[in-house]
Image (cartoon, rainbow, N blue to C red):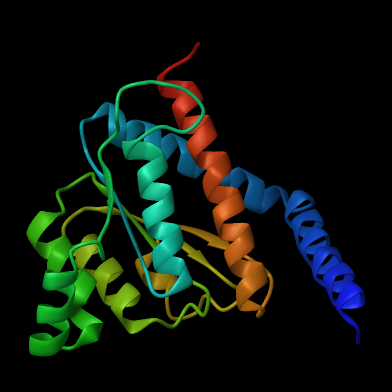
Length: 194
């Protein structure tokens, strides 16, 4: 397959997946509920935490920055952070306790009741994300998961799930950041109407 056909194929796959989400009233309602969860969290001076691995870690950091910085317009910052940004912590805990514990320990240390933890895992099987969600639930932290089509392992620890009906990691990640951006826009608009 030549490059032009690959480009067209990938664009078509992305559009098709977005159309599938567009037709899913369940997913759209779930996104709307998550917007309200975030709004309530920020109104109560709580924090939205994000965690992920690889590209999902980049998405976690990206979305946290949209809240703590700004999205569309100037407004006060909102308490949000990605759990992987302190590399000294990350490498020390991975070395001393194992990588499966890096996010759970930080949620144990920093998370407070009524905070929100968002775990991003395209596979739905990332042990460090599952452990963080377990720890969060034990502390009364609201849990949100962005994942792909596989939800069995993560579902017991997730109050809210955005499940992208795909096994294709790049397409799943594209939808995670796309939906994350919609959430950012609606949270900003709700908290700081212009």
